[in-house]
Length: 517
Image 1: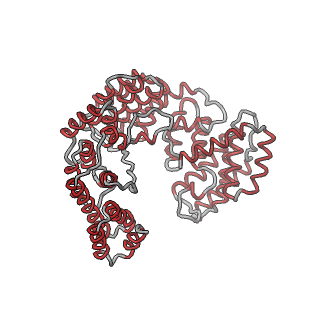
Image 2: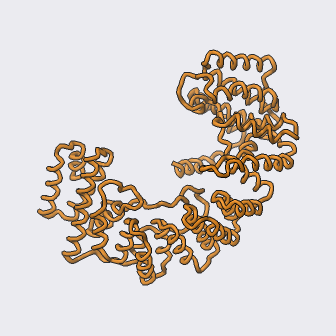
Image 3: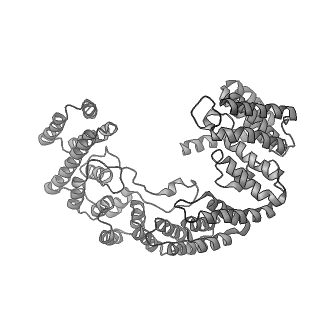
């Protein structure tokens, strides 16, 4: 969905660039009548906000004192009766935003406080048991950020940090406040006064709050806020000092990522190495830090990249890390040598990785044992060999109908698309480098086919016994693949036996019949 959205925007941008203000105005006037009520309201809100923050000097009309009084009376009635019409709440919150955008921060504070806090606490109902952002057209998180900024603008400088912290506490659950400084600056219509002094006061205040939650099982929000303000006040050097002092994985990540985002790969390599040494050897983040060191080495063109890739895999074996290390091989000879080293180190429980290693080594008997002995359920688990080994075996026997699945356990796919990533070859690339021939002798073909049939039978038994109807199609596809690679009389008899044995499962029967067409 993300890539499709990016492509759409890429198509729109040149057309928008080609239009002047009058053309854009005409387009908007032409399209607005086609908007439904909700989209029209969202568009109007966005239009007003962008116009007010454009630097043109325009601002919407702020509600007067009499109107503010009416809104406060409405909010009090809603709390007393326990109900408010969401359309009216929307309209009044929009007036609060108008007050904010016109820099009447005192009025914005009153309106937001009267409506957002009781709405967030559930003190009145709006007719639907849904989240605020699903009921309202205005963005509650934007209103919450405007409330915090209004608090900043109306607080005495000596009490500004305490006021902002109290305002954020009031808006918890309405706004995210993952990075409060950024979220505040995202909504301002004018520069925050005395920001430098505020940042140091904010740092001291957040530091005290973060210290109270240092021993909590989960990281407290204040720890994130502290990293944000340390970076703003002290830069990467401040993050480094903080990370070395706390040795917390989240602090170490912030330091390393800041260097990577700055493109300082030499210092990033040293930081990732240091971070990996500072966390306990069994810590879940250690493999990620070693991945980061390898990425830095890749960006720097270091010749020892394969050594760093191997180090990361040995520290925390995963299919992605294995593919990276093996994929850095420059020849079949180097690849096979690394396969042997990996087999000696790979945990016995990592059946998918061991299956790939045996496959690249040409040891089909061991792969067959792993596939045949694997359970019928749990195919989606990282250590289950089925999703990888079954299609590989089918392909060896001449059936390419089953495509290789995505075996990526790499979270780097979640980062920005243009961010540097470690090269991660596909399984097919490794197989091509290994130069594996298809099994020609009857014994090897028989071993492979027997394992495929065993896996198919276990899968069908597992999904039917546990009523996993969503997986009937996948289970049937395995049986059908076995018939395609062996359409002999024996193969047909095996398939008909499966159909007969599970004749009381009509949904499975439909999948089996459908695949034969």
